[in-house]
Image (cartoon, rainbow, N blue to C red; front, side):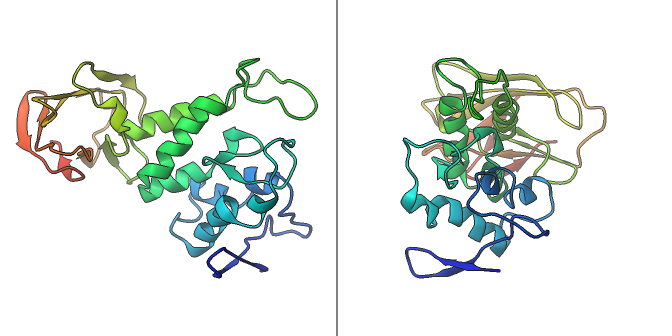
Length: 248
């Protein structure tokens, strides 16, 4: 494989666009339909050195030095605030951050999709290819990421994880955040939560209609400064910000 050198002088390998001849790292599809897809598909882990080098290539590699934000979508592909410079719906790198529990980059990508994946002029998510297409295919990615930030049935085999990457902005004392009957492979799950007791307690209402019981149900305590207890369906327990609690 060829290599590239980052700004710290470290050399990285470039993953081939495909196993057949003619792989092209300069085409926008190298980002949208290239090796980043391997983590979402389950073929490689996000901490694999090849995957880490590939994400770094799009974040800070040589393409970023010549990218023109005023140019068209078919120039050399880069990540702009963690979403694809070509078609945001193919920002597979956000699933790398999800798997690695990289809260900052995961939320940067999720909120970038919220702010930039749909046109403010036409309200569609694909204005490329010399015309306007009425596709909304950025929306399924966005909805999936919103769900996974709070109700995650994918990160661990047979496990259900709650609030693993929940945005801290959704934790308030003056209002409640609710996810109602969210689909999971185990069955519909509903979770509502808010901060209480001067932000020292996290109050959670949780219910599920399981078709089959998860092997584990784990609550990820959000990293809120001063938080020392969690109240789940009225049951109080001590908590540490960033800790994990098992729910029976």
